Image 1 (spheres, helix red, strand yellow):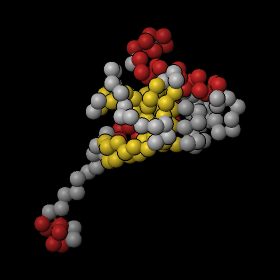
Image 2 (cartoon, rainbow, N blue to C red; image 1 turned 30 degrees about the vertical axis):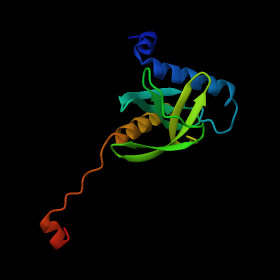
Image 3 (cartoon, helix red, strand yellow; image 1 turned 135 degrees about the horizontal axis):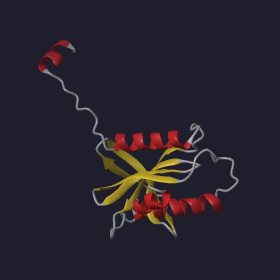
Image 4 (cartoon, helix red, strand yellow; image 1 turned 90 degrees about the vertical axis):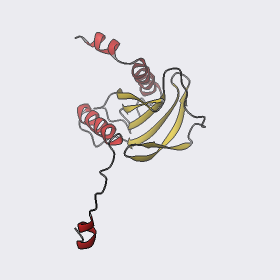
Length: 153
């Protein structure tokens, strides 16, 4: 499969997010010292979840979890910069609302900002995928038996 068909097979929201953040990279972020030039803009792992789309976004300046509206839906009303807690199988996390004329409204939770600790793009993608997996993995339920309670096991 070539890159053009790979891109066409990806969900439209991921492609739009990448295009929007690539524009931000080239226009607003160009030349800033907080860019890790080893990284590029890539949206990944988006899935439908409780009426929204959740995934990750790697950029040369940060790695974030992202919440987008589901097709035909909208995120809860919030001012840009306002924090809201979203609950996931692994716990509750603060996401900051953002809006962009080209991208619309979305919410983001910073994982790495800036993203200097990554020597290559593949390492950043691996970290983003691991964070997404952890987000949707419930914590192990503590199993305390009567014996464990009585004997401190």
